Image (cartoon, rainbow, N blue to C red):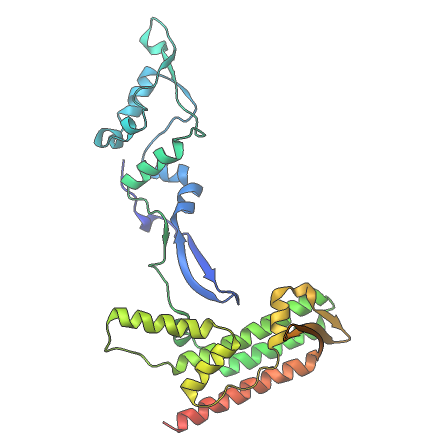
Length: 299
């Protein structure tokens, strides 16, 4: 038997996303890791369990004599030291015991006790790689030139494809990418707080994150607090909501997007020419960049 060493394994990293499909945090689902790799982990920690097998007394004693069972009371706790002989014979080597199957009620708890003792991680762990959204944008900001180039590429792909579902998916991607640009600009303006307690720092970061991930109005109020001016107009919000609620609810007709907007409990059919939408996205980028430039000059 040997203890578990995570450095010998490929980390089962998972990604958690927010409602806009942006990465919110990374985590490790160790319980899933235990289930998926159960046999490999048992082999690694050098433990053999004869699930569902009919074993003779010598094999049974070998099972009971494994280091982990001599060092703990796991076997006794699950009654596996008191299995009955199901096939008796005069010759001791011909006496057999039926070991419980893996589907036995207590099998998962038995494995869990072994893994716990051998220090196999459990639960969900956010300690590795977790960052607040604004911290990620600070470290890897979305540049204006990158944004423009990407939007132009998406626009070109939209015009080239004949598949309306792909068109709508690409348009939604462009709107998500635009929100990412705005979040990146907001995050770059947030100052680093160094002379406060870790508790206060967490409260501040939670509040920043809530503002950054809030709806459009919340994000714009936060923008105005930071830059002292309003963010550029974003007239595609209703389209963004329509595509997010259900991409099938929008239609493409003659290179125009037809969707439903909801105003004070009233639904209104809206039409947005695709080429004009992408022009608006580029205009938004240019106006946002100008705000950043003017803000830098005012320092």
